Length: 400
Image (cartoon, rainbow, N blue to C red; front, top):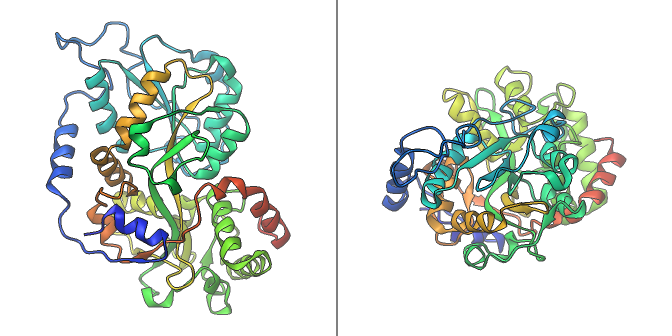
């Protein structure tokens, strides 16, 4: 079985071996217990089982979003009205997140019940979350940020939107590679930016590396999302680290020469284009593919862990942080430590189609079924620290 320790082994250049045996009974039992909790709200139960009368709205799982349910568009703009209408509520934990509600509700419902405090979820795109925090300033009600891509967290740090925290219990389950060295954020799970392809016309052995997709044989077969899409910038950071800037620019120019349609908005659009036959192959986040697969179980699109033997696949994170203006930091810290524990990591990773990062936690059956994976050892914090270098390289290559 693929354990998170195997994934960590990959960080050191080793290959992960996988199989599709059943997940551990502990994870299964936890999932069953959590999803069976009555009610669809995140309201904590009082001793009399009567929800607090003043929290019916704030404790609901209604996702305030300016952009619908597509959490992959990292360049969306926020709903400006939220900054003026949203306010902190006493004894309520407010979470700003781009993660699918289905991946969070079982966990957060359980935690709200344990601490007897309602949890309010506000869903938006990653960059829109940062824009919200800036617009709201000291009046922001956000206590926790839960989103994806280390580049997003680094941007938040640079803009003074986060505060460092000391979550000793969480750190015990989060290897150093997955933590901000200054304590501003920690990761909860990881995913890869890898190849997806149309199995009606391609075989898995046809696909090898990121650089290979720049070759002439892929002419008029490739789909790309835009260079302003943050996951692509993080990928380019990885490529520069492995190939150098000059070679990375050549690869990007080759990609652009091979596209069959103009660059697309995001991963969702790439997957739709492959499904409709507009292209045969593209690069997406593995968790976005997992979400697409669950919505379209009969899709001909398959996933391939790319770049084996070429430095490993580029991985990134979903992570958690405490905003600078948080009003309930103790509650926020408690949630972070609880989410980082092994069992919660395993369940969260399974529900979000990501890898847990606790060395003792189990990956899901679905991810194991996708085969062996070799992971690039680059520290994920580089995705933020070197983002400007990646953007400059993308601009020079014409991919921005």
